[in-house]
Image (cartoon, rainbow, N blue to C red; front, side, top):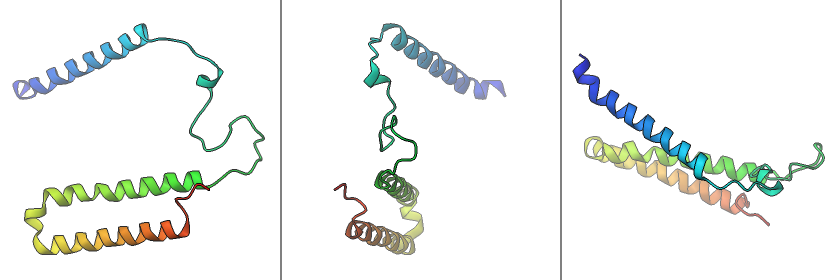
Length: 118
């Protein structure tokens, strides 16, 4: 049974070794010039060093949730595309309904101003 899994084991060992080697080389040879701006947290939607009870803009989180939502819905298109010849006309019709619902939802968000950063 081992000869059947030996190529997979060799592949995993080589991949782990190459990954570790590349990470170690990047750590050893990479430039290190940290400053206060590079060490500050980022992508939180608001300044991190202000009052903890301040009001912040919810639009950042709304856009992030919308991105995740549409990204996951688009992931449903891949299995549909792979099995397109098997599912036939019913599959095409159901996917057209699904995509039209996505388009209607996107237009609704656009009209409501959820994607505006004014």
